Length: 284
Ligand SMILES: NC(=O)c1ccc[n+]([C@@H]2O[C@H](COP(=O)([O-])OP(=O)(O)OC[C@H]3O[C@@H](n4cnc5c(N)ncnc54)[C@H](OP(=O)(O)O)[C@@H]3O)[C@@H](O)[C@H]2O)c1
Image (tube, rainbow, N blue to C red; front, side, top):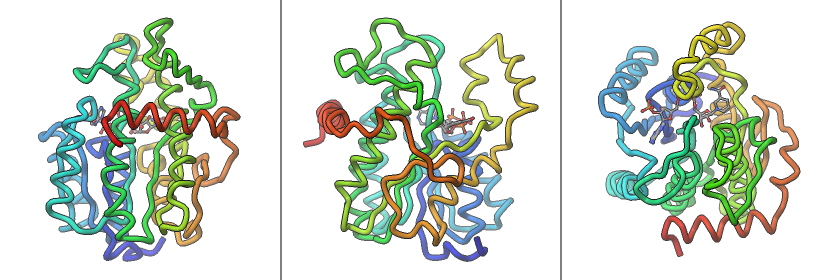
């Protein structure tokens, strides 16, 4: 991509304090975009802003705070954004966690489900009007190859039985893919596209934190992982490449379009998941 190719575009990146999110925001800033960094912690967010300003030389970066384990916080984020901006060309839904043990948010949802999926569902829906108004615009979901192992049982989506970090994470990532496809269909004809991706195996904090005392495993694994800069290549490609103008409802493994898990093409499941999600986050 040419530097300057995103001049005039406003791009929001969630989970921009570290890893793939910070690198994605940095690359988009280098392409000339105005970047909105969404972080949950002010100090970490400000450090990411300083880093991006230094690296890209941009003056067009803004920090907004939101904790995705709180639906109220996501609503406030959307309200704040819409109160001060009238355009949005790219939304990169990147924030995510993996939790070794099961916990429940104050909203009553299993934490991974809420942070990695339900909050993205809410934020995306709250920003749809401004994305449509700004079309052509793009919604990008940072999913994972883990979605292939995901299973969604709407009878126990909260995983009260048989919780494991991988089951919870891959279920949330499969939910993201189903949401991407259903959203792309619903947005047909609006000029807003929705695609999802696996960024590769990237050396970030995501697995270091849940592994805790076993994080030495991560130290060794890091030798075989790609850098966050390389990992950001695919979200930036989906967010900005002219090749993908009008391409929607697709899953990419890095920059290659791939077939996603069989369950992700289940249209009945996608609609049922949408209804469950809308009711859960209080959308009509
Ligand atoms: N790394 C990989 O190999 C890999 C592979 C496939 C997919 N992914 C996906 O890539 C995305 C980015 O992850 P990463 O690998 O870059 O890991 P990371 O460095 O841990 O970044 C995760 C980001 O999400 C934010 N976040 C976590 N919980 C949050 C919450 N409750 N509210 C708001 N923000 C929250 C983190 O903020 P804090 O700094 O405040 O914690 C951080 O900015 C995730 O969706 C992950 O599932 C990663």
